[in-house]
Amino acid sequence: MAPHIVPADVTDIQQVLADHDRYWGGRDLRGLHLPALVHEFGSTCLVARDEDGIRGYVIGFVTPDRTGYVHLIATRDDTRGTGLGRALYTAFADAARGQGAVRLKAITTVGNEGSAAFHRSLGFEVRVEEEYNGPGQPRVVFTRDL
Image 1 (tube, one colour):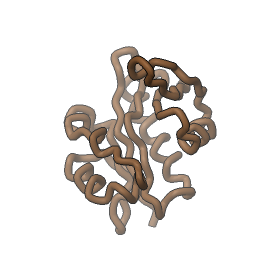
Image 2 (cartoon, rainbow, N blue to C red):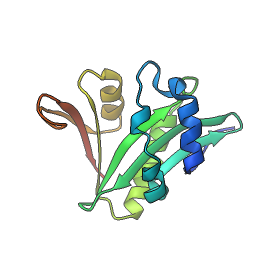
Image 3 (tube, rainbow, N blue to C red):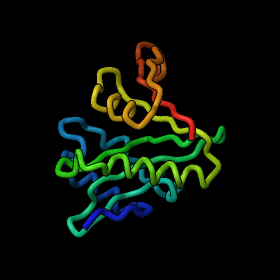
Image 4 (cartoon, rainbow, N blue to C red):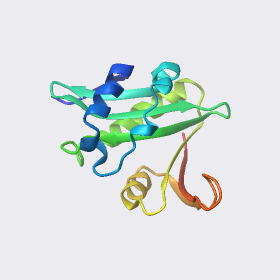
């Protein structure tokens, strides 16, 4: 059975955090999983669920300038390469467009080549902004029109 993509709730984020390494490997991104984002932007925070639990998720929102911002997107280690990340992005884009978004945006750290390749495959423009996250903290910025 293919995962079903639905709006997330806070208990979904708690489940993801309990199984954090299966989504993020050795990277500790637990501090970025803010329940407030799910409370406030529930229609653009999505999970892909099947009988085996949460296979992937996206946490995002639409900004006042009509940008659908993807804060986090991840697929579980046993689901990578199946097209689920692409399906989550498509579902997020549809939800964001429904709220008036005209573009998508995401960021990652410099050197995260997997994320850069994934976003390029989805048609995103990729650029480095040297002080995006403050002095000496460059980030790779992905943007794409809807």
